[in-house]
Image (cartoon, rainbow, N blue to C red; front, side):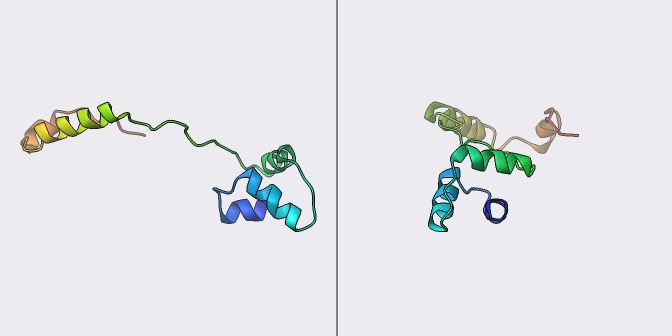
Length: 85
C-alpha cells in the first residue's frame, strides 16, 4: 500500500502515510515507511525551506532582462550557454 500510494502521488508525506495506515488499522512509524520505500528503490527528498531567489535577486534579474530586451540576435550568439550533455 505504501509503495502504491507514493507511486500515484510522489508528494505524499510520511505523516500522510502513517495516518492512512492508522485508519486502515495498522500502526507504523515514519522510520518504517522510509525504510520500506528505500527497499523498494524509491528515494526521498525534502522541500527547500527558503526561496531560491531573494527579492533583491529577483529585482536584479528583472533589471538585467529589461536592459537587454532589445539586444540584437547577434549579441545572443556570443553568449556561452551552459548545456547539459
